[in-house]
Length: 374
Image (cartoon, rainbow, N blue to C red; front, side, top):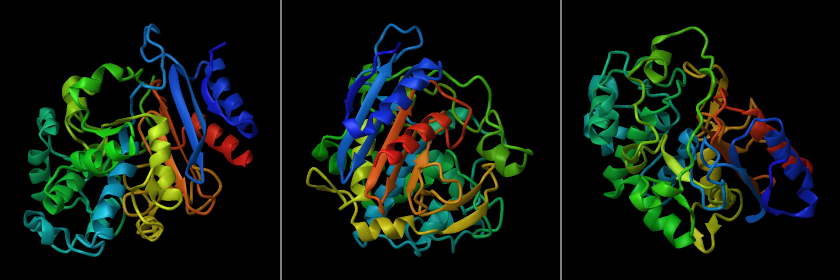
């Protein structure tokens, strides 16, 4: 039996049992799950191994790449600019980033872009995959592109590109990169082990990922799906390398612990603060989570409801029973969520990736057990 470590208040024993069951069933290598109630961590469990050879224990200091779960953090950083009056959700992106107006995109608003409506999920035509390691170049290429569908008519998940779009928007408003602002304004003051752009000094703590045995099922191949996922140039090679960890891709290369993510999301679920550090006011959280578009996504094989960069829980209910819960999931299984109605939040990270794009059964089981214990 795998030894389970960490905190679990007695009433949440069902969560510990669900966590242990995933290990017993061979579904995990290393993993961590944290759950907060009223901003306080009541569950923080970890177990397993940080490496594929099972020589390094997965412990409380292990950093895990969370891929697209990073988008929940990036969405919060943009919402902070709106809260500060430095940006508006209905503001055309081109007012801040004039080059973005090319190819008829002059009217695309901040909230349309961040809710995957701008028609820029990637590149249908081949590009050099090493360019993904140069965010300003990718941002300029995206600004020059024509949308793949009429803006505002549908969402099409911008799996990787949204990080370059949001990152450039943030930099033009704030002057700093998004990852730098996250570190200086939130992570360091609040003591959160949460990074977008990981310093070399922290690389030795990173979990080694075990890739899934198969690719996700996207259905019929279309140009948006090819651009986002189904082409050799849709993402950089070398993910997991020092170069990958070092750069900032606010859509894909966050490194964190479940505890840090749960505390961050716990602020969104409650009064907006972590240890006295302001993250986002409750009113701003509601506005950021408000539905911008709903319908069959042009890239993901799901009906999606998008807030301003957040996945909304309805209609799929991968993050518990509350329809208005917001969050995000990451390739392979990670997720983070905030429920402002019940004032709870949680995060799941792991290094054995599964094929599920959203709603990994391991996280669903943990979240259901946590809610049943309330």
